[in-house]
Image (cartoon, rainbow, N blue to C red; front, side):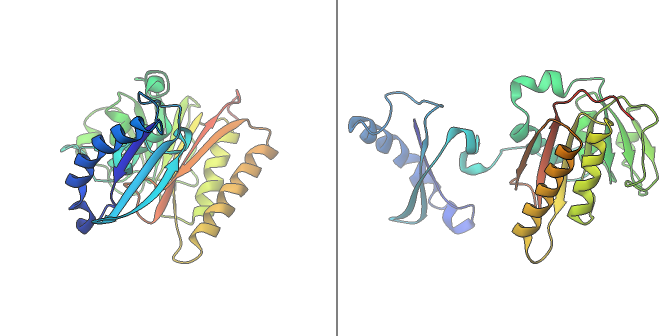
Length: 261
């Protein structure tokens, strides 16, 4: 249905990008001429990938439309907002692009919603909710950026993120980028969903130096079992985003109508 001719995201490989762009059109035409591609781009068909690592050397593969990146080379072209408190804001913006379908943003990222940001300081993730006209409980013993405080849209709680409980149970989003053990963060997010304190959770799991893949599998499996045992219907997604560092980002959407308790 489509073809993508790309390179690794390295300075050396990027020198091949000009060639890749020029090579894409004749390659696409040649494949269509041989009947190897649909006459027009088809988003429901698999995508052919050619990844050039050096002149004349490439890997060939394919991906399914339900499991590939919407971005060229998997890199979202997001601009860092000059008024954002930290570059971590790009992690959450990318997560919204990847995990929330664009045609659902008006409903699921709506103005007037309440969110909770655990480990909020200085406010990189909070910024994304504030700019969407949401209200945010910011939980962190550190100081929040003055620019966010001045919006009147946030309440700063200088308490432990693992002990915080919102007074009013009207929260839609719980977000968390705390530097803590991943198993502990995953369990905490599960508790927020199970108790009905939030409808959606978006959080990072910081990975250990060794056994990262095993850690991720175990933490996500334990979280799934935790939710299932408490009879919660849910949708879960996890991905190492382009703007992530030594971490992965996880999204949970509760599909159960849970009364907060």
